[in-house]
Image (cartoon, rainbow, N blue to C red; front, side, top):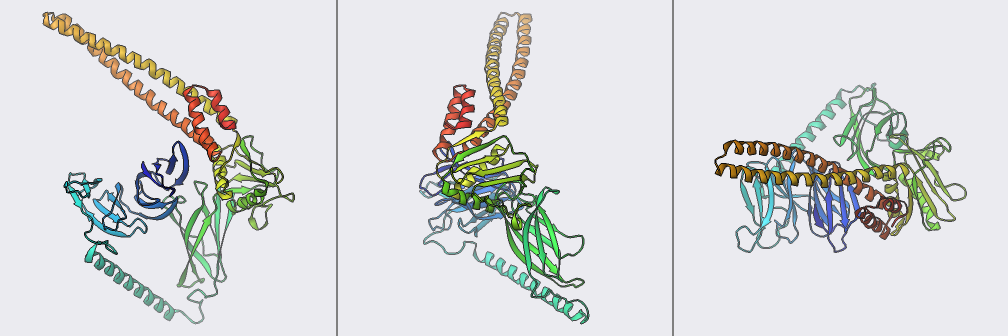
Length: 553
């Protein structure tokens, strides 16, 4: 956790990184922003302005500015510590990271450029900023797991332009550039040799300049994925595609090769979250039978809900759960455009050029989609005359995501809604019953442990009295009873710890349900739902909670 002004309003918010790959920004009890990362969040730290640094379990560190990623880098080593310190003396703190290989790195908060690095003899255990020498100046202190300490002072005098890494770093950069030059020369010589050996009657050794590359997204119901379809101008063929996508592939990249070189290639993509993802792609194109090849670079952005395919009317059963709310009637055409943009690439048979139809002739929105993940239906309807919008789906998280994205797209600051998720409410009622049961068990076990503790105290007194009176048999009897009571205490502690863990898990489910209900609203209505639900839980009123979830506070 960390405090930082994440939205640039001049007030610091609470940042919380969790095991579900989310970075949540809290203002009071309200979640005002969420960012989904590719791995478990292990570190957060405040930087200047609206920027904050983060670290992931897979060795990634980076910086966010107002909810947008400014930069990130990834290492094969693990991040052990994260902090901030103005090492170059320019008045702006840099991002400092300590690693499992003992490396200490200092990077510019805006660009990620390394301005200083050092290495300890063991893994970094902690990074601290304090006036260690008691001279009125704070130092950056790095501590290794073997007890090694290193302190760093800021640059003296005026702020230093560039970096503090000195001539060694410059020499290292020159060596890398020289190596890259040699590799490029070698590749050029290889191409020249292939051109020389190519026969005049054989296929062209290089791809013609007129070759074009086209990309599109198509749903693949059989594979449960959305296909990235890449095609090139004949007679050139595609021999492979390298794709990089965060939160898309297991190792953030994939190399796809067709069974045989082809003019059109499909790469199945399965986003795990409903968020826009930009893929960086390299397509290898060559001429049939030729040794030469050309690499086309292109970016392709997956819309947030690309894993939903538009279904024909009557082909899927409308779910009996969902959320409804009112917007201004003049916003309905903008809602139609939003649906077209966010569900683009998940078009179906009824839509032209694979794009979802935006509205019916009466200007009402009436869309039905089917998830490519599990086949669950999703319906979005809006009345142009009344501004009534209904989102029907069984997944409460999905409905909340659509409501929040729609509010952001249409710039809606306040939104009340009516929710109807009977299965979720029934399951939530069971969770509340478990919480009550765990609490009553906790109280009962606390009383039992207190009783056993008092028994142990009494046995200690009796054993000591027997010892002073020289009654050894009675003393042994008391100590034997004390041993049995201690065994009972240990068993009770184990049961109490198990009950506590189950109680925490149930309370986590309760909090998640409250957040789901809040995400179905916006603005003050969202905050009221959170506070009202917690008040109802405190008053042990499950019926009130169900009403708050359905109608708002």
